[in-house]
Image 1 (cartoon, rainbow, N blue to C red):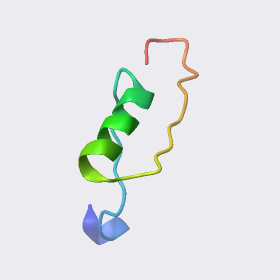
Image 2: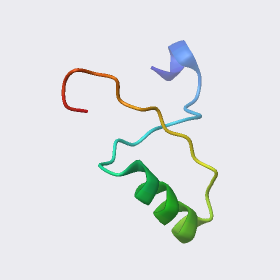
Image 3: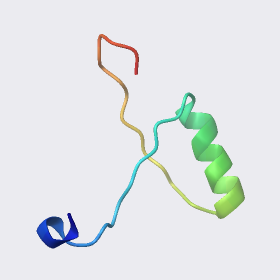
Image 4: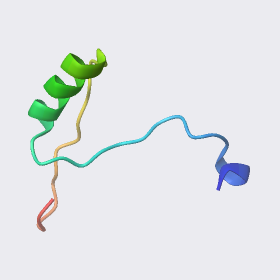
Amino acid sequence: MSRHYGTLFQHGYVVPDADAAAHDRAARMGVGPSSSIPCRSPFRC
């Protein structure tokens, strides 16, 4: 895939509680600020 799109520069995680995950990640790794995309699917996200 890298030969088509270049090197990996971003990744994402799916978590049950985005706010808690963002706070945990900031506290453990000093990473932030974070952003999230709300689920707008009629199915379970």
